[in-house]
Length: 220
Image 1: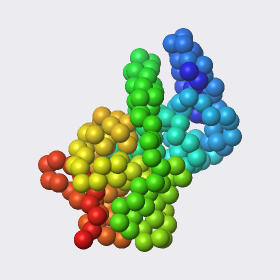
Image 2: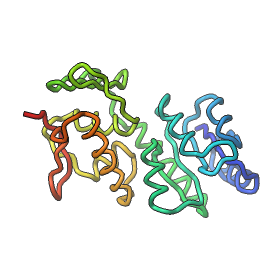
Image 3: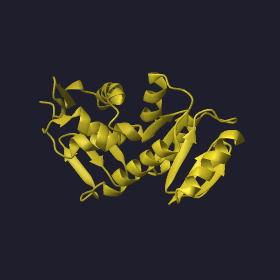
């Protein structure tokens, strides 16, 4: 398994890369965001937030816009808002320094396993009244007008649209969209739901079922 380690501090990157190699991973290390965006696609990205040329959130957003490669943010920032931002721009998990190599390896394997087990898409276009969602091109339109969504907004809407009317629990949404079981990140679901309701033009598309979860409805 090939890992891309994006970390500018040698004192952190070198022992981390060595530890991961001892665990059997192939590790390519780069020190800037620009390098991370230029190298070939790995099997998983370990991405530091504090890079010298651009912040890791911007790198994550750009990687996610063109690839589904798993991304784990590795950073010294442990505040909840930073975790939410990281998950919101497309990260699959978030590890706060300092951390043990065993914890990181466990997270790498868990994210990789969830990605590999993700069921293949069996259909491309989903049409629900005025809303059309194409999972192949990752495009959404309402009444023929294309709606610009972030990667996670699209993934959330696609999940709800996979079974219209069914209630999806927050735990399931976190597992399938953000590929995490960290409950603190549930707050980012609310952020994405609010954005989706605004973008699709009618809040009643996404219904909150109190104490249960969310479901997609076709507005009357």
